[in-house]
Length: 320
Image (cartoon, rainbow, N blue to C red; front, side, top):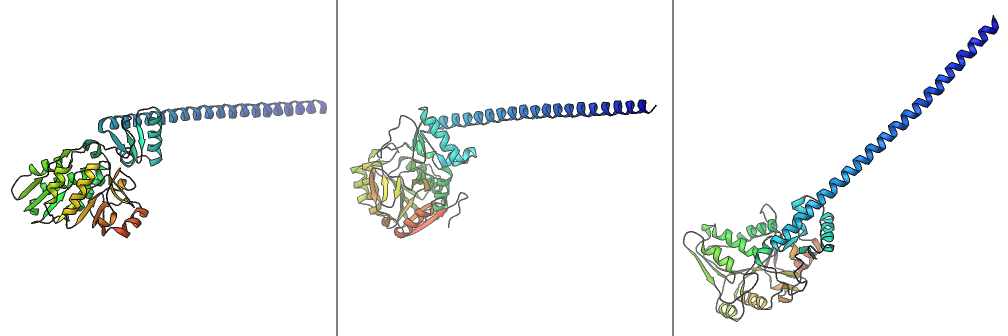
C-alpha cells in the first residue's frame, strides 16, 4: 500500500515538474515571439520614418531649386523661415543641390549655377527682391519715420529703397516732398502716387542690371543738386565701408552722398560681410544705419565705432 502511494506521489511530482518545464519553455518561446514582433515593428517604424524624412527633404529641395530658377537666388535665412527647419538643415540641402549642379553656393545662400562667383557680380532687381523680404519691409517702415514734409530727399537704387518709395507714395501727410532718384522702379512707384505735392526728379544715365541709372550723366545731374537726406541702399558693408559690384554705380552713389546733408544707409543684416568690387565710402560717412535686429553683435560693435546712429528695425516694423 505504501509503495503504491509513493509511486503515485512520484508520478504526480514528475508530471508537475514536466508541466513546469513545458510552461517555462512556452513562456520562453512566447517572449521570443514578442521580441521578434517588436524588432519587426521597430524596423518598420525606422523604415517609414527614414522614407518620410527623405521624402520631405526631396520636397524641400525641389522647392529650393524652383525658387532659385524663379528668382535667381535664395538666402538661407529666408529658407529657414519658409520651411521651419534649422539653419544646418538648409545648408545641407544647398550643399547636396550644389553637388548635383542644380545651384551654386554663395555666402548666405545660393544662386543659379549659371551665375559667376565674382565680386563684380550684380544680381538683377527681381532676384534681389526675394532676399530678406521681411527684414527689408521692416527697415523701410523704420526709415519712413525719418522722412519729413517740405524736405528734398534722395533715394538711391535698391529693393529696400523701392519699398520705402512705396510707403512714401502711400503717405500723403509727408507732402509736399521732393524726391531725387537714380532708380527707375523708385521713380515709377512715386509717379503713380495719387494726389499732388510729390515732385520726382529722375537723373539720367546708363541703366544697370539692378535698374539704376549711373555714369557721367547721373553724376553731372547730382552735382548740381542739394538734398536734406539721402536714403542709400548698398550691396554690402564691412569694417572697410560700403561696397557695390558696379564701378559706375559706386561713382554715382558717391555723387548722391556728396549732395546730401545727411546720409541714411538701408541694409539688412545679410549685407554685413558682403564685399563688392568697388568701395563707395567709409563707414564714418554714414550718419544713420537702418538695419534689422538680426545684425550680429560683433557687427554692431564695429559699426558703433564709426556710424553716427544705428536704428534696429523689427519684423513688426518697430524700431529701437
